[in-house]
Length: 497
Image 1 (spheres, one colour):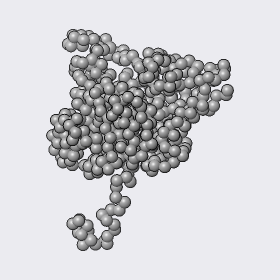
Image 2 (tube, rainbow, N blue to C red; image 1 turned 60 degrees about the vertical axis):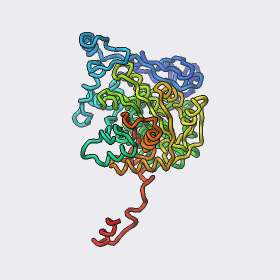
Image 3 (spheres, rainbow, N blue to C red; image 1 turned 90 degrees about the horizontal axis):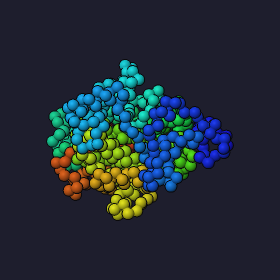
Image 4 (tube, rainbow, N blue to C red; image 1 turned 180 degrees about the vertical axis):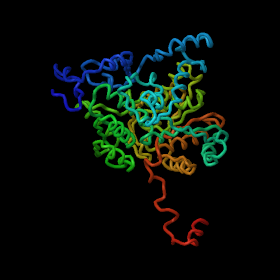
């Protein structure tokens, strides 16, 4: 079988001569990934991160999804000094077992020092860009990639807005309305819509495209409801790779479609929904040797852990009581939960936050499974105006179920009407978000009303996408009831309404 132009072998069971056709991995790539493995979340089978002479692996032989396991290594130049300081001042080794956070933790020192580097292209060195990135700042916990392969815009460093009734502060009266609506005294919203392409997907895509670079891929592909495709198209263009995206032919927000086209990705609209597109792209990537960058790819999900690490750092490593986020394909639930667990094991935080995953009532398979005690996996025909979470068969179900069980989390559903009402509150506060993001606030309000989240608990909510991603939903199509005459009297009448 001849290798195609993408540079990756299309068939794991190909002819005996296919090894010669695969890209030769650079020695520093082989070395970097030598302590990284992939473990099946279903049967626990362990695979190496790269298998010589074989294409990338996205699933276990049993069909289960994979999770990345990596040995965390302190940077060599700081390891000895950090160990000596910790042993002298705090009585534990450089890599503790968890449960006792300390200002002397070597990991905390490293991450806090790196955060001081501004991620500004015009004045930053390559290392400063990595340190300033809200993903690669935590690179030892994300992906051991040689710096020359890293593709960063840079991403991350998104705002954590204090919006609670008590913690809002002066000069932000509009933000306090969000806390009042939720019924929370200490409430923060972390806006991932402030990433380069306008959504949290950039966190995972910088890692996924970097991995594609390391493997010598020439093309990358994904199925998407819009945000993943926009992010892939941007990062692929920066890396000089061919981006290929598969989108449902209907119900994709125009702003997201425009991004994919503008960045030069080959954009294929298919008859069917996201789940149909996901089945197709997995087949295409396996048969044509294209590198897959959906959350089925465990390395892409690793990048999304940085949301958790960054919000903890913004809170001075004081873990909140709750983390609440929208839930579609469940990559964020999986990734952020994993980040919290790793932060606890490294003694960066003293307790694991509880996680609440919020689904749209019309796209609620995870909620249905949760209500049955996860006795069986559910799937649905998804239908919601929150297009970013319109997914009926989430890829990361098993990973996310494990997170919810580990942290004593919950799964809730909210209606489209509740989502639009919450979106209006966020928009009118001057923050703004796409509809799927507003599921967070709608879910918080519902959980507070039910007494599951207490009014005095500290809560962080994730907004996943920018308002401009889907600017038409929930916005009146006319301004002020229509046009008026260009006179001062006409203006007075409008303002009096």
